[in-house]
Image (cartoon, rainbow, N blue to C red):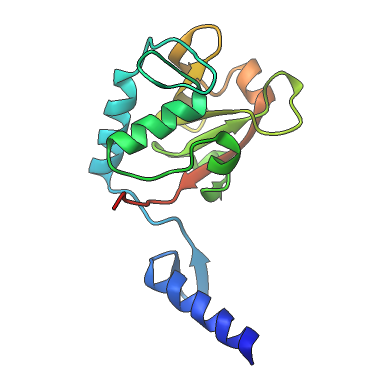
Length: 168
């Protein structure tokens, strides 16, 4: 009985937060959507960080790593996200490659890593195989790159549409 109560409580909470919506006779789990204006603002903020040098564990203009870049972009716009890429990879819903949109997060396992060790923010999608993302490169700092290059495609792990969580 207690388990059933918890299940119904969970469904009620998730439904009221907009994480489940009814689609026909099915329920579809969706990330709470950022508005186009919010995404545009996040992208604009990310562009301001171009050229900042890489610094492991950094999230300031003196230097930042890839997860610190996303963390800084979202916090600057009063959104709360996890700080490290492993937790960021769980902070949203997976998106198939052919449905990647501006504002989605891309996760990578670079240099043969066994777990996710890199993240970028999708800045532009011109068509299915033209996806530009911003990230903090260890060698060149914060910069933009194309997903559909040999290096990035080989390292690609998944795309995530992040949850929307405003700072209180």
